[in-house]
Length: 218
Picture 1 (cartoon, rainbow, N blue to C red):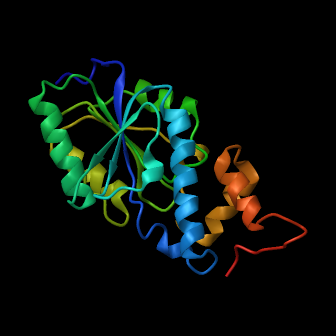
Picture 2 (picture 1 turned 90 degrees about the horizontal axis):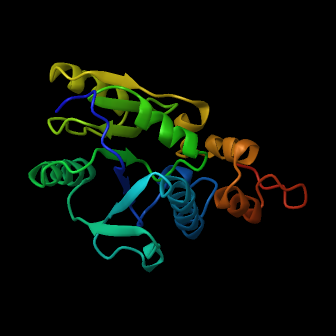
């Protein structure tokens, strides 16, 4: 497939695991709070991404009933993340690759429409958008040979895999596209720069409130 051909609109895939979300935030958030946080971050991502193309939420079986979201379909898979995504890529190829695939992680509450448009406009068979911790927050796939390898510091793994395959790689990176929420210190970025429902939720928990003075530091 020719990397110079930009098929529009993209088909956006948002992986989302509703159970056991964000365990590394357990020192500062209860399980119910983490679940709510994950849902609000997902909704912030979808509110931005829905402007750019069709959305599929890749979730687990027995997906949370709150995932009934207008203009987004839910695809449930019992496979682990990489197997589920790579099966989806293969099936997309079997359908003739009707549009490019854009994977966006569900924990990016600072994501902007400019970020989505920016990665779509970046050249490459594969375009990678790193997280601050070395993960991969977004991947635009224009070549069906590519496969994901999310695990730990996945950005370099994805970069090396694409290069081994002989694929042209583009990189897209901004402050907002690099910001995801994995550890308590990440909450500060949302309080400082967030404009969506995630910030409102965190404030309702007492973060950033002079009255409640709840700390995200451990």
